Length: 121
Image (tube, rainbow, N blue to C red; front, side, top):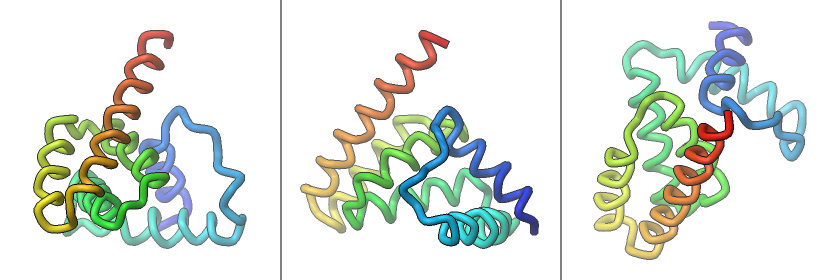
């Protein structure tokens, strides 16, 4: 697995977003090299499955800032909004209503923002 594969995947997931300056450079390299260049490249799960798993964990743990990024990534990978909504409903029964309500709000904002961007592109 390579840094180039990691960069390519990150480019697909986070298409249309500027590079993050909030993440320290060493951590960003590890994210590209290890997480996206190795872990996400394991053929036992598809990239779409990994994206849905990642979104599920972020919803269950209430990580709203990261939900914005990964809901966008899920859409970029072709995951339907209805699939993410079903996941949020499922998570609500295990992780609680507050995280599900927050995630539903974030999902709506992401979809609305991306719909607007697609109209102006």
